Image 1 (spheres, rainbow, N blue to C red):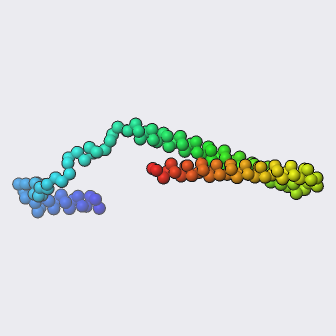
Image 2 (cartoon, rainbow, N blue to C red):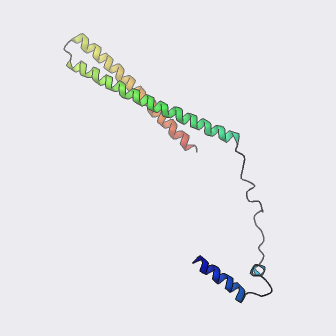
Length: 133
């Protein structure tokens, strides 16, 4: 198809065109609206501030990702330990042991909640660094 169009254009310009002038010379002259150098606004040299921004965001993302994994893993482990202590509380017949297991369960459960909140904060930091892009 491309070759056919080139063939039609070539022979059409030769048969219907002026023999003394080329087809391009017959076209009307167009006033230039844009400057010749259309790439003058493109910055070839990378801005050091932009590079620092990218490096800082990369560092923040890595730090937040590792914090998310760390806090999430610790929250999971602490919640498992809190569940084991709660089972010990339910199965124990001794009042002193029950009180100790209940206190430990409460403390571990609270710690697990704070660790889960830390993991969620790290996830929000990761989202925030991508929203600014």
